[in-house]
Length: 230
Image (cartoon, rainbow, N blue to C red; front, top):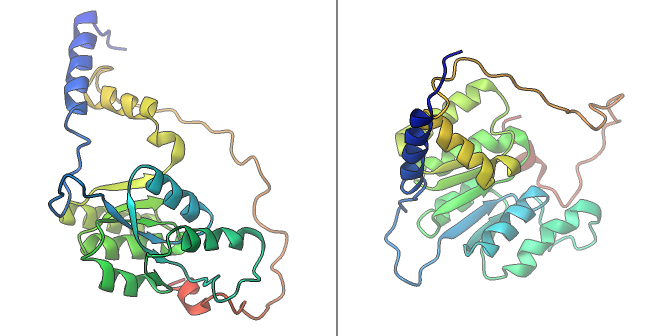
């Protein structure tokens, strides 16, 4: 293994610090005034969508539009995790609500700056690509896509549009992990030739023992929109 001198480490750390001062500044798609806030559209409002919305609002974002295939306001008797869907509607009553994210992007693209994509996995790539093509920055939940081809398609459009993108992986968004990225990119540890990765997952039962019997789609879900391209 190549030895790394103290001088090289210090030089690399300095370069990383310099990079940190500009590399993560976001250039918005519109000019902001002193009192303007980033306006966010949320595609998926329950589960991780609910926490993404709450976190964004807490960070000072303005929630400008909401979208979900479940309209809990029309069916108030839903229970379980579906109750989290109604939180966004109650907390942000002035945000327009849509069932179809395509309609939301078409009507609201000029009114919002970014979107969160917190849908079922098979819809991540489609909603993300459509949003990027509208010039909207994207925060897409993990897994980024449903397959490798989709990941490459998302990467291609991200490069073409130049929007800011991030995959929602909680631990990897923390400052200590960002610092590790800065140090590696600055060459502090030299050229990375090999990476070893391990995990303790899965820590919960995987898959299902058998497919359940077919049932009618719940009335509160727009089934066709939920299925999408699956």
